Length: 46
Length: 141
Image (cartoon, helix red, strand yellow):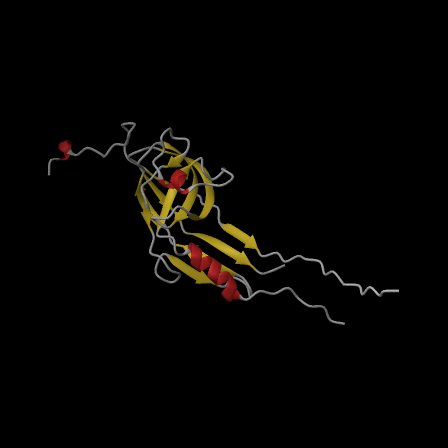
C-alpha cells in the first residue's frame, strides 16, 4: 500500500478524528419515608 | 420498648430499575440536563444550534436487567444498583457541548432517566465514549 495516499479521517473542523470519553455522574436516590401519625380523639357528647 | 425501623423490599426498588432498564436507546445531549423537565424530543432530536439537543445518534441498548447492557446488583442490604454498560466510540453527529445522558424507549414520548456529565466540547465527525455508570436506589430512611 502506498503510504503517501493514506490520509487520516477528519472531523467537521478539518482536524484528525479523536474520541472524547465523557465523565458521567451516577444517580443516587434515597427512599425517604416521612409521615406523622394523627391520633384521633374521641368526642363525647355531653 | 423497641422502635420500628424503616425498611423496603429490594423487589420494590427492582421494579423502578426495571423501568429504566426498558430503555433501548441512550443519547448524548447538550443543554437539556439543566432543564426543569427534559422532553423526549429535546433529547432525541439533532441539535439545531449546538446548545440544546442530541449530539449523537441513538446509542443502542439491550433492554432488561441482566440482558447485557443493564446489570442489577446489591451494594447494601436494602439498596439496589443498576449498572449501564460502557458504550465506546459513538459518532458525534453535531458539534456542541455535551452536558447530559438520556435513557429513552424509542417510539414513546417519555424519558426514562437522565443524568449529567462533565461538560465536554464535541465536534461533529469525532467520536464520543460513554463509560459505565450507575443508578442506585438506596434504602428507606
